[in-house]
Length: 410
Ligand SMILES: O=C(O)C1=C[C@@H](OP(=O)(O)O)[C@@H](O)[C@H](O)C1
Ligand SMILES: C=C(OP(=O)(O)O)C(=O)O
Image (cartoon, rainbow, N blue to C red; front, top):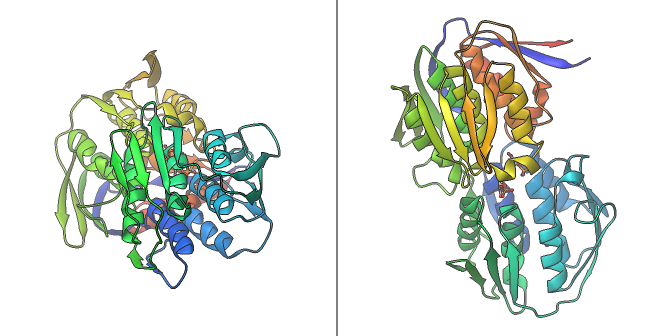
């Protein structure tokens, strides 16, 4: 039996306000840094997203076995947190988490003096963290082309190291805005750092407890942008988003300007209305990999040809997102192919009225990226509960905006 949701929209007209979930990326940085700061920090607007709630529970847990489930930030940030604070823990996660690499982070922490062993395959969780005997090493070379989460994890613990830390980033810097978000949050809690060229320097210093209000999630906003692009008429306000955001996924504003959505910044959030869409576009997702699925699904539905680069990290996220997208757009009559190394092209056809049922591969973003297509025709999405990772109220919010959402098991 597979849980399935059938979604349709009777009018195709979207009007109203959406209260988005708060950013899980900001929340999880704030929670780690607040724990390192000690004292009484006040974190406001932590969302119900499982990734956020999970970290909150785990930071309070005395258990020696820690299950990071499918949350990349939780796995990577806690590895550095437990290692540098000298806690004995076994860190594990879902089957998929144990296929997501962590070697770059583990080796960096080992160089700093952490005792970490692999309990399964070398380079992957589960991990056993046993002790910390500081080597006093200050300068580390770290690859930055696999996941920025390793860099963020190291940066957040860096102020605790007696000599601070100087990271030399090697290779392409993927997901760079997430590194900048980490530095911004560190600064909010009183820790200064310098990012010049490929070098990030963090002196030894103390964090200060602080109040921090998490912004709404720009990645979650991207699905509403897609809905506005596909709607017959739309006037939608997404609450709690700011023009001066820490989140790199604010790039959706510029992407969607070309794909049919006008953004107006207002004090309460962003107001989205429809505009003309281009028929052929090219985007680099190196800075905003979580937006790629939104764009692929929208372009497949709208018959927009798109060339994409910067998708390398998609293969090691909640699922192999390239493969998942290739399979799902094929069902829509579109093709997604790597034409030359690193350059993907999607050739769409205009959507036919054939029945569409999308699989989600235990990936919240597969569900949310394809859901907007329900504005064109009724669709089905399998395992709809995957959205709990970042946006648990996603289906309820669709209903509030006039979608019909029916659950079944087939
Ligand atoms: O640091 C973060 O909060 C994140 C960084 C990105 O991962 P990578 O750095 O692995 O690309 C992003 O895809 C993920 O959803 C959240
Ligand atoms: C990749 C993601 O999350 P994480 O790496 O934190 O599991 C995501 O939310 O799209």
